Image (cartoon, rainbow, N blue to C red):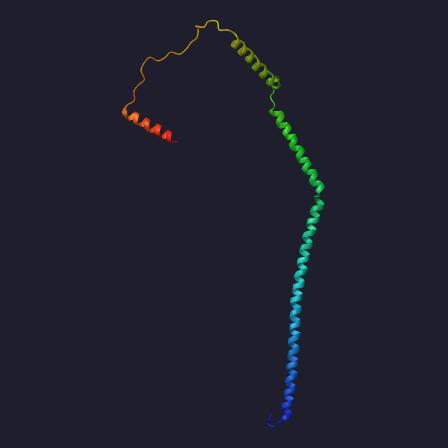
Length: 164
């Protein structure tokens, strides 16, 4: 373009403005498209997450339908009954076979009463012979004396015990 060409300069400026406008439009379209791509990816992830959550919920519902609370309660009752029966069997097997075993408490009470009656009769009866008591003999020898070393140890032990 020539130095004094105003028309050419004006034309160039208009063209530049048009091109800048087009560039701006293209950048806006590009930004819109990038935003749509991001939104589509997010929507796709949301859909996959939803489907996974729905499948998990459906699996839990199927399991719950297969095993309802009533079935669980019935099973637990059956288990308790089986355990009680097993305990009854165990108790029956551990029970003594001795026919008098059930009367053991009564027999012990009777034995104690007999002993108490005999003791009471013995205490209430007068001794037949007062001189017939057997007492241990009294030692007639002197007690051994301690050596000085043993006496010193004895005093130390007594002092320790007194300090406690």
